[in-house]
Amino acid sequence: IVRPIPPNLRADLTRPRIANVSDPVAQQPRDYCPLTPATFLDFGLPIFGSPIFATNTCVEDSLVYRAAVSDAVFGRRLTQTAYNSSVRLHGIHHITAIAGDPQRNVDFYTQLLGLRFAKRTVNFDDPSTYHLYYGDRTGRPGTAITFFAWPGARRGTRGTGQVVATSFAIPKDSLGYWKARFDEHHIFHEVVPDRFNATALRFIDPDGLMLELIESNHLDDIDLNYETEVPKKFAIHGFHSPTLQVQHSKKTEGVLAILGFELVGEEAGRKRFSVDSKLTSASIDLVERPDGQFGINSAGTVHHIAFRCADELEQSHWREQIAARGLHVTPVIDRFYFHSIYFREPGGILFEIATEGPGFTADEPAERLGETLKLPPQYEKHRAEIEQALPPVSVGPKTKTVG
View 1 (cartoon, rainbow, N blue to C red):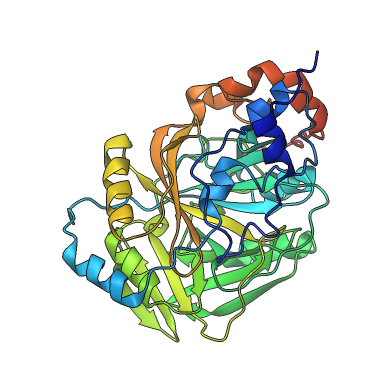
View 2 (view 1 turned 30 degrees about the vertical axis):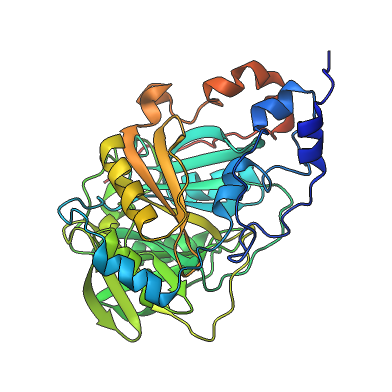
């Protein structure tokens, strides 16, 4: 039985769409939003290919616009607002990008790159599409690359206001293995000039997302106790200084300073910032391109980068500090596996701060991660409709880890 759509919801359905949710100068969010994905389903409305998801949900409305803070105001707030500099972020939590075909995405990241399929769930703001997570054995923060899979999505364009290269750490002297592996699977790759005395290999995934493998003498402590074709001695060990690109870096650097990042190196127009020099997943690179064009978010581009904090108390601290600088920040959003706040830094890049836990074992044991579709409680009653809208995805056979 389909209930009649109430007038306020009908009005929401007919309001104009935001043409490009990645547009850094899009409209500011409205204060009140009666529409949620669960409500959409409650009234018998099709979620797949709907005119609203994932552009006009409350969350997207809260995230799309660029905080227009003047240099004078931002600088004054940066110097006048006291904050506890002893509280720092713990590094990168995850990076979320956009993919097209979900099966192709699963095959590339699990079979070729050897990552663990850590969670199969849905985009909480658009439950008609997958949200897929890959990482170490449990997809712990610092290792998790995630994807919104939108079948048929157009290719996006990389540019300013984006994370333009998602980089991972690999053991020293393992570049030869990866070159041979990419050659075997016909993946175009190139060695990039050394950065900060480290050698890197650049390649792209099937949707055009730019990826890098960077050799490192020190590696994050991660859990590689799962089955994969990639030998442990060559395996990916979480993130390593992904590249953020903006037109003007001054205010972005100010935000990074607020978050506890320190400048630890600079060469060839590239600045490296870190919150913990012992962790590769605690570093990011910032590149300024004054003449660069803003990127367009779609398949093959990064949607947002998330940084990690210990718990909700630290997250509350960060939310207060960000709001005090005149930047719009969302309320805390329950993502079931962690809690999140979002804001768009002045250069246009969407930042998230997420808690360390509860983690992906909150609803399934570690040995079964990624095997079945997991839904947050608010969507369980709609499981049949959601599963019908999602294309099937399977994980191919693996060869037991060697080495």
